[in-house]
Length: 416
Image (cartoon, rainbow, N blue to C red; front, side):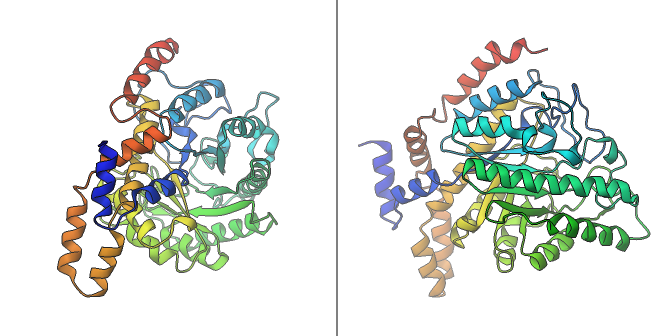
């Protein structure tokens, strides 16, 4: 008897259908963030640095992607080690400017056509983000809330352009694109006036979203944050601001696992937010004491997020994306570890004895509920995971790292 056959029987004894779980898992894409591969540098200029915007990648592990071609080669290697069909999440600062330089307020699909073509050739969906950082007009950490009207207009036009690009990407790939708005705007020290920047942000967003774009193609999302680098005391786009704005305008609300207080549980917010907005975007990350964007692990917070999606029947209304960047370890391994861990957490949620747990809860038998939750943790999840990897033709848990190490020796080591 194979390990998977034995595991399937053990789960079946608790009313869990492992085949159904594997089918759902295979159909649930994760959106891989391109910026893990080059430390959020982008390709708008050679050797770009992150001037302004509250984003910082730490570490100097050798082998960082320096060109679009190198980044795509690294993504190819990572995707070959991750089970399932997934998506690519691209920031606007990763524009392909090989045909000529264009500033962000004038971007069109032309600057991202090579990304669309690449995704189409790989069978990948694609998601998109305006980039409100690493630009001279974001050097003081203000964009859509800037007191200077001309600077605000530049960033408003950038947001409008990105929504149109998102719709065109979706049209070409035959899959809706989530276009997510995050801005770094805030204050390092205590502001006197908290209201005016938020009024400017609301007005700027209104202008961006007033431009008609097919909502079946482009899914608009807004993302909040508790604090950031250079905005430790005040962030304009707070949780309360964006939650209210997304409810009012029926936009997707982005919940980032690192953007809340360390004692808050993102998983607890999901069922509340989805009472009032059509869909959500998740940025799965791992904050260590702050929003430090560590590589996702198969830890309790990530498992809790996936459990909430499954228990509430929210998978069909949720877009799962990753948002971490670690320059202190092999960047391809970071993609693989983080994505595989996210998928494992989802598998664990799909393999819970849901019917028995629901039955115990409805009967008021909280003793049995707690016992079942704990006993489910020692069921043979690993055997089902290995079967998923086998069916998706990717290496299992004890062999993928050797391929990354070989790629590091044969490819990454030659990069200066």
